[in-house]
Length: 391
Image 1 (cartoon, helix red, strand yellow):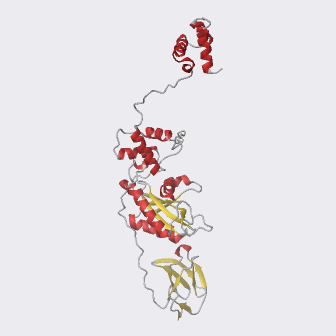
Image 2: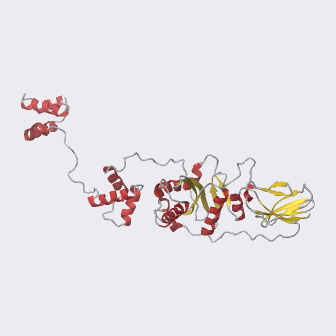
Image 3: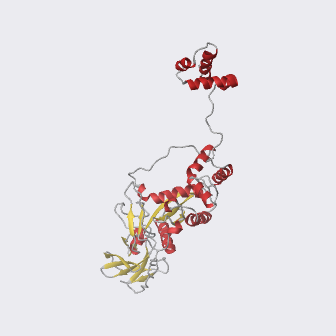
């Protein structure tokens, strides 16, 4: 029998059969007060008074007012990636009264069916949060892809944030992930914001040659060394070490919406620059007390050390070559590898009877024994105006 039928049988036991209320209550395992309540409902409404009734109160004084609930849902519709915390913060910014808590906004979203209620996930105690004590102490840098272009290709971006303030110091798009393009973006970030004390990256080939076979010195490492920057590397297969830049990538993909396609790389870069400005100066960041990252960031006093001008070496014993893409310089049919990090640079070679000295700028890169004799073609780094030069 249903609940209504059971209550009806109890009522009939008192009315029709003349049984005592205590006896009927004992039979159905309820109190005498409950049986009297069933009798009163039956006399007033008949069978319609016996089913279960709602216990919901007629009014809820602490529930969010309807006009504020409409405002919350409109904000959520305009910004689909905003959660309850961000929506509550926006209501505070707009000075909406009465103030609504984060939990009240969450319940509003659940009632409207905008989000599904989920069990709260608490942070594991084994995870240790850390950040540097001040800005410009550490930059986290990485390369992220997935920026679609109208011609069907996709671009990548060199991204970087300041560890203390979460300030985005680099978001430079490039058609391909190449060492020179990454280093150009790194130099641009240092010219704009100054030189950090340390830089943390993963073990990608554009950042380090430590795990190459054999190990090599890449251009990114050389830039750090020349500017007094301590280059830190993550442990292999440990992406949580650079968790801040990975979390920035998640924000970038959602809020900037990397699923959209841009007409050209320049158009994509302009749109990305506008979003980075908003991220740095307007968007509240939970990790910095719901303030924009610029509130905790200031540029370093230490500026980028520009490389010294290449000296003129025009003597009869000097020849100039352009370093190949694999880091090889050829002089007098003798090929010498001076390092792929110097690819594309102008290399001055001092030719003597027994040795060859390889100079890039003011740096003596390598000295090797000369294995050939005779005249050596003398030409500029761009390959023009070849002449003959004696030993």
